[in-house]
Length: 500
Image (cartoon, rainbow, N blue to C red; front, side):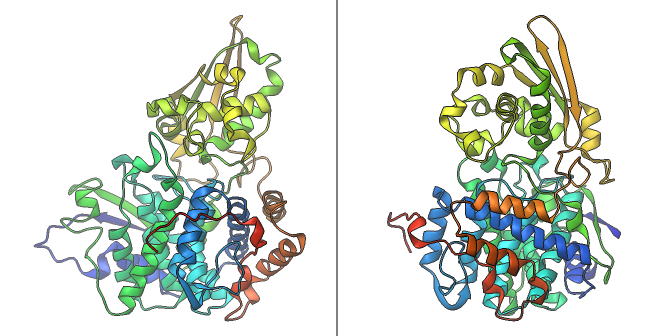
């Protein structure tokens, strides 16, 4: 790996493009390095993971709306839509839009946390859509996915966006562009311009994840993927991009992030070096913000220690800066304590999540978020007794560069009415690669079967699982088999008139 130092240069100083971060990204995207065997297998795991949560969300309103939009953009030799007959094809950018929304809607796929946040699985829908429309083979798709993960993970390690209230999709646009470039074997110059265009067009604020969180939280990554596809298309036709997009005097860094005196350190593999960053990422066992995963496991264990939940006086959660200020009481969002809040808000409230997990001793992607569940009196009592605190020890663990030491958990102190304190702590979720029971292929398959039960026919479920595990051998034109069909009568429609 090479750590690249990224800073702003005044316009009077010409920064050669080969010294720019976008070029460095393009170089590794176009180097055609050997694919790592474990990275290939993990890519397949994540395609299964994405399919699980996408099928489970097919009839949720944002996904239905996104599908209706995509259905208006049919194309003879295009890409497929989750749930829809695979013989029907659509423009790849619109397929990416709809499929990406389905993947993101439940907040239930993979994650990587470092200087910033990310859901690297968001790269997969646009890459599959472009691969289908361009008749690529399985290995082409795998190369694109592995490259996209490499770029996003390393941008997340080096550049913090949330500090400036910029949404994390600003790292997704460049990674999708790089992944597509790698998959299509585009020239370094073309990928360089596409990465810059994709970043320039995917900057948005974090208001989408604060206050009253709306369905745009699900749409945002899909929108970034769609914009990245369009960026690549433009530069393939000979168009350029704002440059240098990271280091320029009026660039993203200078005007939106740390400013003209900024210095970022972004690690990237050497040209030709095998890409393995996907192996540093982790998926979710529970449908909630990743920083709540270890705390759900912790709540399940504490339930066995607290004999009478009615005797709880208060609960203090000592955790990292990120957890406290984003999904804890440090966010100062009254909606995070409101039983009438949207599901999108509740899955970003560690107070709500911990209270429900403590009471139920389990977590369910639907049942744990119902209005009835949120308004239960016993839940409200526990929920409102919870307060989070930043503990610098946990913040340090959160940012530890060593994957084996990095932690996203907390210490929980439950104080009972009689003054007795029950204390427990946990660093990573049980399903984390370094947890008590790391997710393996069988776990991904079980998650798929569980989430798609009563939605998919067993025959279709078995067919998909067989095909995806044989991805390396799929030939050009066979990637349509990665689509999953649902009986038409099981798909909800939204007949409200739009523009399309």
